[in-house]
View 1 (cartoon, one colour):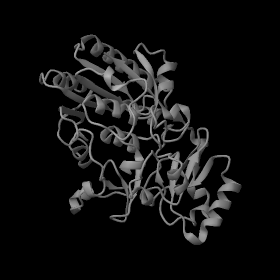
View 2: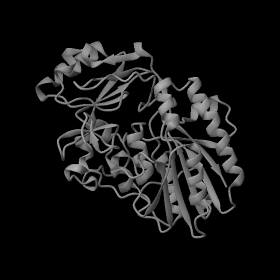
View 3: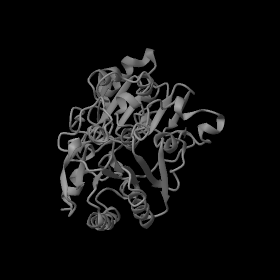
Length: 376
């Protein structure tokens, strides 16, 4: 399943919201939620990792209007940046968790604005994030009072500050604090408001324990109860939208393909893997391209498909319209897309392998479909 950037993705949802505030967009509005359906104020809650198929399987009591696709790849680094900018990877050029930044010659964790290997954040060395992520934030374009609600550990990060320009940032420590800040923003002023609220714990639990774990289900039930309580108190001048950035699959240990077990593949690479565990960007030495392709065909075809990165840009996997020039450097020479519930991982010298069960970024329906819950 690929993103529907024409009228059925989270990018189109952001266009509906933008257009409802009178700001025109390059991407069409969301077909199942046109801008005229939105009220004076918009509260957008993003529950990280809460896929549409998962929600349906739990017979959720939340009023689900339908489903949307995430972006490609279906991962937080790409999708959260789309919520914050209103455009997909094609324009914002943040294509995953690990991103090679040619400007400073480092593989980064882009949302943390820090190296993949241990080290201090780049801004401490005088590097400006606005020179790395050169897409305007969604809130910087709105002619309305904007709020951005995020955890205390990330609310004032370089990434958050860049992505919430002209918005008032509110932080929280726990779930009670999350809903307290939502209510604070809702009751703050009588002027028109856009409120973006981000909750990451469901994603963290699903990574660690798996999407079908008791830990994830318990947390979902708590969230569902609190969201229903919020719905009951909602004022008539506000539209509440609840959605997510991606869904999940589970991959047990036997489904993990380790690069160190494939030295002939590893010697073709000029850089560590970038991207995520299910969509991987490979930087390949020009003299090794045949060896790289042959090895994948004969040894890993059961686990992944591979494409030249330029091909996926041309086929609009990352979005429509003119690509950000930075994108070409950030998606490598080849893209591996994992099949079924396999993942492919490498390991740096100073890294310990994470033993996560839950994964995402791929193009399965479970990962790509996210819910659209709308309360007017």
